[in-house]
Length: 325
Image: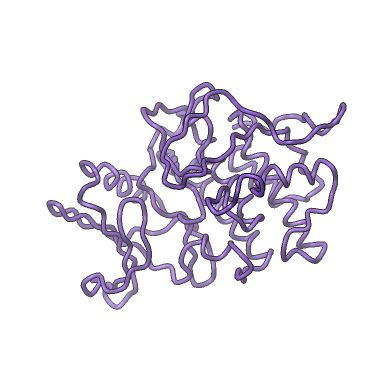
């Protein structure tokens, strides 16, 4: 199908992805590494994604599980992953399209959390795992870390942290922050939306300590002081409103306390509503991201220092929490 793995599309945590052809139709085939455990990540992906059918979730067309050979056959996404389109000055996606992509990802997550027979928690939402079709319609992919739970089950138990540094919710590292639930995906979604606006990674090994700018902190400071966001590429009033709306929703989603994060249905409602209707989020406590991209787990303990902002008696420091499911 892949013509002997001739064209490689990318590399994921559990294997390489290659372009292939199935009955004349282009497909993407993920070949899983033989050395990765007993196949748990393969079973995870097949079991979770085979239950889905949504325009914003990638379609699984088939799989191979023959002795040590494991492969997953997906629909082909000609525009690749989102991370290739949001970083740097080379990005050609306009603000309206960025907003549509953020909204589509949110709808896909809402479906995984509420629309399936069994609730699916993805645990690895990030730009690299969002694929774009020929019309730049976003599709959530890579379900190797996903967990299934009963529809009415709100909390789940986990023996170890899972996900990608910079996007993992605090409670996934330490239960001192709360219980792991669908709100953990909401946190990752918020980080990704903020990254889409900032056009920069959450952490970068190339930045020196003194010059590093952590975008969520920077954005929160500007909103609190009512300063111009001045995001690159946002020139019209409408584009600036889109950027501000995405920032506000992103900041709600990355609240350290899971109970303060909105469910995906509420996040979508805020994105689709007016900017004026969005309440100002409480000040989140965010731990500094790891500077080692090779790291898999970092110990957070208790929340560290909050965003760098000082005010006396500001009414914006605390607001009503977003509604819960």
